[in-house]
Length: 250
Image (tube, rainbow, N blue to C red; front, side):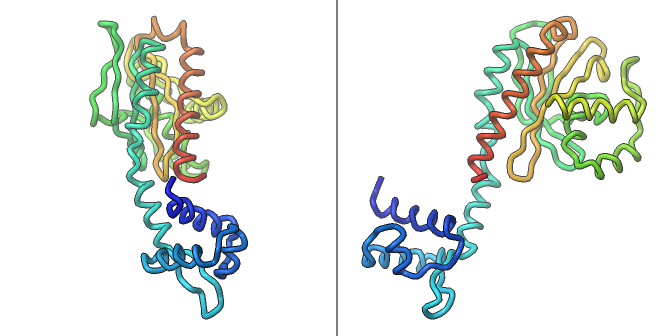
């Protein structure tokens, strides 16, 4: 790595570590770098608007420009590109459809879909939305990501329409399903939205967005591997949580 680049990063990390204004001599001492070298890096950061002098002889501190740059980068991180190889691998492992949706408020839109080799398979188009909050695993996962007060308000106003004979139409029963999903890390829809189809969903977060990963397939194939699919789904979402958390500096 270039020495000047390394020193610039050392400067920024030093401020994050010290959490206070630093004088030129402070920086030189803490980084064990000659004052002359510190001066050059410091002046470059000041000229670019990343550091300012708090007061005459009051030390230096980063401006909000760095935060703004980092936020702009974070908000436009290509999460689908990050997730794609993991989703493909999950599709190959389970040999069922795997989907990625992004939540916005109480809606979620599919961003990626990967289908298995089976001729009989669950299909969903990119751009379609999760059709129901109470009858789909994706909808339940979205509800499970809400804080308790918001969840209570949503359930109070919800109309639980029956799509099949298995659709949950009781609000207390739905609340129990959501709590169960929260505890085990994934949510299940066993023929509640479409006859013969079982789906599992789990979530991960990036910046201020909730993403939903769903595994879906015919009930006859899904039920024997439900536990396996649930464990794999939770592991994938935790991995994505860790990746995006690291990228965000958490």
